[in-house]
Image 1: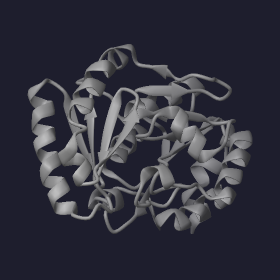
Image 2: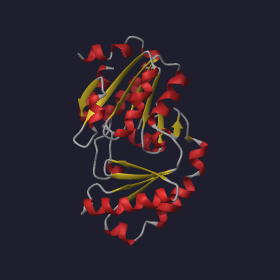
Image 3: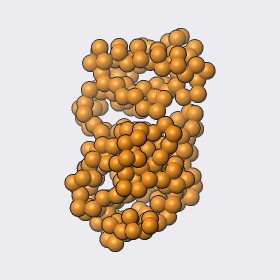
Image 4: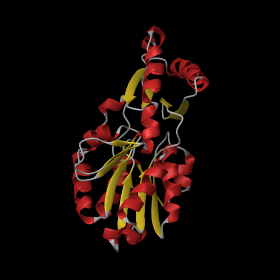
Length: 254
């Protein structure tokens, strides 16, 4: 039963953390990232959890301030850009890992130089995520052609010393600095002296956060199943739900 799986968290909530991916976990995946919405009832549930648990945080590939805008809850923390940024409750500006921030102009310059006619004809959308730039091709007229062109962009980025990451119909151009969601979870656990935690996610980048929970005495890994998600999310999860609608039941149980 769901209550039994969550018992390590609900028994002593002040020593437990709730860490959540946003897109695909709290908000349904949509054609354009800027059109994503977190249901109002989900936002209300997160606000209630923030008063009960030791730490509640959204750990997202989006910029931290953009994640907070989307989720709409001011009383929780936001780790953005896959862990490169941290926005604590009440803060107006996120703290960015210095080594990551130093590379932001190089990343932005690289992407601006490729924001030309061919990408625009393919309808590729560029999202500025601060130190990270994302190129989206979900829903464009010819997704295969867009993917092929972006494979070339990825090769060019790597040749210039930048790092790339492929997500669900998105290519990210990143600074060559090691950051991941697991590092963000580890830091939040340390700051709040937690003994148990839950992480819920739907994509490959969430597996690092699953790994980070190994260091805790008690942990719950929630895999949010989707048609595009990696098999490992389901295989490694302690609990599997179907989409954000299924995960809403977990929030209610918490």
